Length: 421
Ligand code: PA5
Image 1 (cartoon, helix red, strand yellow):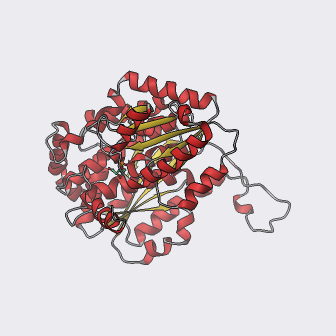
Image 2: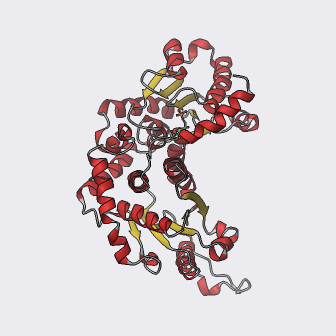
Image 3: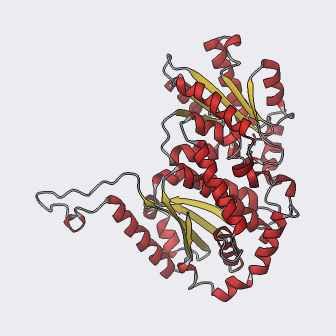
């Protein structure tokens, strides 16, 4: 099981303070269980691990096995919650399949780089993902790629190659899929974009990349069982939510989630979107920032150690690396590293983590750590569910709706005006 260490919080928050927020946590917990809180019509993600229809899973497996058998390339088009979760999985697990992500920006260079990279003999499949079916970034990329696919395979060759993941009824993408006869996967009505990684939104690209989605879902449902069966006071996701909220009340309004493993990078990005878009509204919210350590200890590490004291941190560490590389012994100690010769690189990484946690505590930055036993599909499932439930509770502690994002419309309105839509 993933675990949460909170020792370095205690110099900043007394146990009494942590205990005192318990009634609010219990209230948030019962709002979730009874579907009685703000945005309760979007709680479908709660049971995707345990309750996803077996037919949906087998259809994901069937379609993805065609892509895998052909050693095809999947162009996965989507933005925000419609791509970050699967991208996180593929990076975290170093999955083998070729999945290229597009539609998450508006750069011609980006998309032409991808299309130019594809060897002409490769089979190409497209998964376009949009719950609304109208988001401009994926819509434009899909137009470009649709045109490219039509030229490559002809209009009649596309129905097996283009897979749309979208709303059951609404939106331009659903209409287009119906008209053109594309394969479709449905995003459940009660699951919002950033909570959709465990629906076909995330599961299909993961399966195309060769990830064992049954193991991911097992991790999710074990975490779900744990969350809803353990004592509220002991619950690690609730503890994480409680501590971040108490720190926020004490003026710590920036959280930096950092990973001591490069493969965590897109999990951090997924978390950033999940937390910032869920909590940042009504003039409230913790600024969700991320860092890759030790890399970023050589940049924002300075600011964390000695800048304005409005930051707290959560570290993500992997207990057991998949590979071990020993630092070799040389004939001569010319680089002065003999004192660590024979040790694993990851041993040094662990000491860097411990040294950082101590230095930041002493520098006035409260910090906690999430330990992941090893890099696996199963623990990835636990991570997704842990953060999803934690953000719902966190937002309820702030008395805001975690499941909407009205602020995102502001830039779109201006852009559409400038584009004379
Ligand atoms: O969490 C959300 O709702 C958003 O981040 C969406 O996932 C993102 O804006 C993409 O929306 P759509 O899937 O409708 O294209």
